[in-house]
Amino acid sequence: MGYTAEEWAERIGRRLDITFWLTHLTRRTGSRSAVDVLLSILEERKLRAAPAKTYGGQHVVCFQDAPLHGVFQNLESERRMRGLKKKEGTKRPVFRYEAVGVMFMKQDVFAAGGRPVLYEHPDKARGILPREEWWRIVALNLDADPPLDWTHERE
Image 1 (tube, one colour):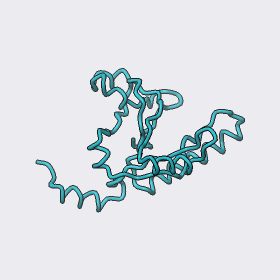
Image 2: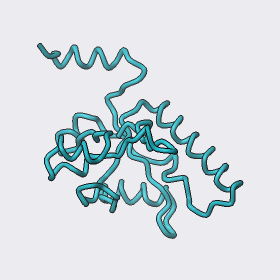
Image 3: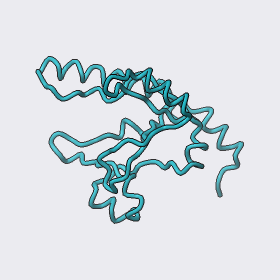
């Protein structure tokens, strides 16, 4: 037996680790700041799917399914990693997004076709999801050295 809508809302409302909201963070793109990107989103009332290295080859819009304090923890980790990479002399940027973005009700994103990703080894995940949903696969391999784990993003 499932929850009623009221029971679902009450349960989520009493938890600190889940939320009704999904967060989409922006980043600098070319000469446009993260704030400029956010203003474009608000003016156009549209999120643009970005090319991503998905297993299905589709362009995707990413959201974090985490309470705001969890999103801030991710941002702080990104900031620290960026500083460490600079000290090591690495050229590759680590900071993938900034503390600028928008939040949407989870139910609205779901109604528009948004779905959670499947964190799994890609070969196994391809056997679970139909080909048209391979965009949902995010590689997870804790046996790798270093481990491949993006579960902290809760996409």
